[in-house]
Image 1 (cartoon, rainbow, N blue to C red):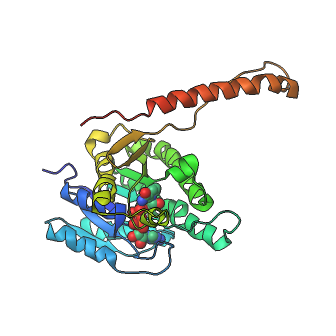
Image 2: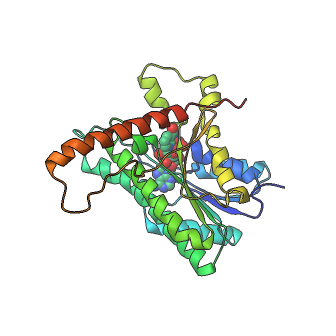
Image 3: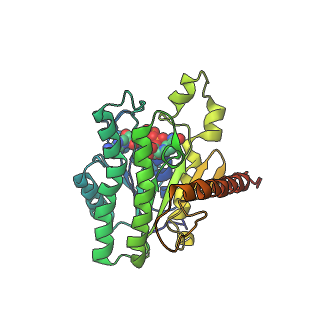
Amino acid sequence: MGRLDDKVAVITGAGRGIGREIALLMAREGASIVVNDLGGNTDGTGTGMIADDVVEEIRAAGGEAVSNTDSVAEVAGGEALLATALDAFGGMDILVNNAGILRDRTIFKMEEADWDAVQAVHLKGHYCCSRPFARYIRDNNRTGCRIINFSSVSGLIGNFGQANYGAAKAGIAGFSRVLALELAKYGCTVNTISPGALTRMTIPLRENRGENVGEEDLEQGGPQHIAPICAWLATDAASGITSQIFHTGRGGIAIMQQPAVIKQFHKSAGVWTLAELDRYVPQLMAAKQAHDQAVKEGAMPVEVG
Ligand SMILES: NC(=O)c1ccc[n+]([C@@H]2O[C@H](COP(=O)([O-])OP(=O)(O)OC[C@H]3O[C@@H](n4cnc5c(N)ncnc54)[C@H](O)[C@@H]3O)[C@@H](O)[C@H]2O)c1
């Protein structure tokens, strides 16, 4: 008995890295898997057949899987993903929007193509794969489905040299909150993962700092640490959890705060004068600092063994 028996999961960018680990774990838990990956380079150029290798791995372990090499950056690709799931397994229950690329540059050097390529795969890619699935859920009244999206601290907090990627990843968090509202009546949850894992996306950053990444590092910080929360969010145990952002990696599992008003003043008549703002903005800033400090203290990890 697996926790995902009889479920059909489509996982984008599952030919390697985090997506591959999610595909392997969900298959072990009994889901039938569509392994999507166009098999390109980290910057989004090129193609390859790596999705087939993951399909072989799943089948060799006794699971069910088929591959799909369409790009998530076009709606036609998202529609083909749904069609692949329906043809192979007769339905679709879980969508993991994991595919991603990087084109890191500071704003001074960022060309339009770097901006567009990253938006296309990440932010638009989430739309392209979610829209066909959402329509399928509505048209078939298929209840209990799951969408799991991939954001990043780059967008949720900020990271130097990643304006294109950070903007897309922050956009994905906003996209997820809206989808959670729109799909709630079908019992479909929409949650977001902020991962931290050693993959081909992040290993070069470590190596550029002169750090070696060895077997032990990969064991402690590899993409296998991201898969469990994704699989768990797809189970029945998570049916009441939606519109949340979980940060995970290296043995950590955390819930992140989301935009909310911390403190406010209200004036019953007239617009704020600049002199009044001289008085009240520092009080807002003080409330923000106290809030940030409380959040920082609450975020200290609790060791659980
Ligand atoms: N590794 C981290 O620490 C980290 C941190 C924050 C966010 N993320 C996010 O997690 C996700 C997975 O990252 P990863 O580290 O496993 O990267 P990865 O490069 O190992 O894997 C990403 C996969 O997506 C595929 N892909 C790229 N463009 C595609 C497209 N248009 N259509 C279909 N497939 C496509 C690639 O071929 C690749 O196999 C990404 O969305 C990434 O932005 C990763």
